Length: 451
Image (cartoon, helix red, strand yellow):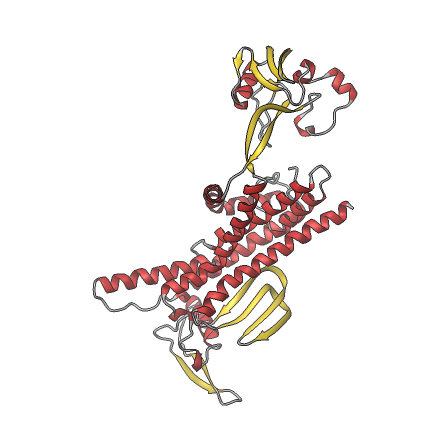
């Protein structure tokens, strides 16, 4: 049963991500066609074609490697001044075939020229007014921004639904009522397991020894009236091994309990520390904060800042994964994961025996939303071959044409994105390497749900 639930979790995640990819590409294709552009291909995946069907002028299909998708919009690259598209031959049906005439030297120049020539092999004379590079700049922004915007809208829809009903799991409101009393003191690496009778007898927590119970509301600690749980934390930590008089409200009446706190290292996810603080052994009740559309927008604003910071350190974090693969260091449980790692986490959530069905559903939804939000934000990075690179080119075209009109200078024409192809190939190569490292890391040293 556990294995079946694991596979179900993986399947749900993979299907959701593939659906997100498909919707991302629709976000490009629909406005491109709406603005008169010609879209010749719409594919989910890369590599060999598994299935395809021609509908009108567009071929729709699925490829073997489900790690992305693409739409082919003709005329992305304009002919350069020295490279004019000319009719050079006629096909079997008597239609003219256009190629880009070129005469270039140098590796990068040849690379650009070859890419431009390949682009124009798909262009017929009837397409001259449907070329992407001829679209107004704002239409280019809408077409290229449509894909990642769809991912962000998917994330927004999921977040809004979860926050309005279940609440935000990462934004909890902590009360002053005790939810759980730990029976014994366990080493940090063994936290969560059930105490043995011997451990309860020989090393009870101060809270258990004092007789604190779930449902008790803490009224005061050593004479200090308690307004929120942060006060309890501070007072316990500073109490060291001293005596503690705790007043709690139980069944409508106040009960005075006395115990002696102990000293132990504080819980700090994976961070070693020599600091030692007072310890009581209780867990307060908490509830996820709920909110509507405005709350969701506010939370996604915070997420945007966090993702922007993460993108800036992504190469460093991937390098950390590479070192974890060869055993140089432990893998950061909060570091990046690939779609493979996301699938494994989804499987662990679905098969976890101690997570309720509602919590499983929420966790899977939040995982899918998080991936969509990151994909959307990542694609807005202003570097080719990402969507943000094309958006940046369109905005630069608008800027320099606007200045030309303002100062009554000749129209500078379309921005030639082909000149940035060497940068695009470097970026694409880096992304490929990072993707491979993350996939290998998720197979060799995976991040687990309880990490």
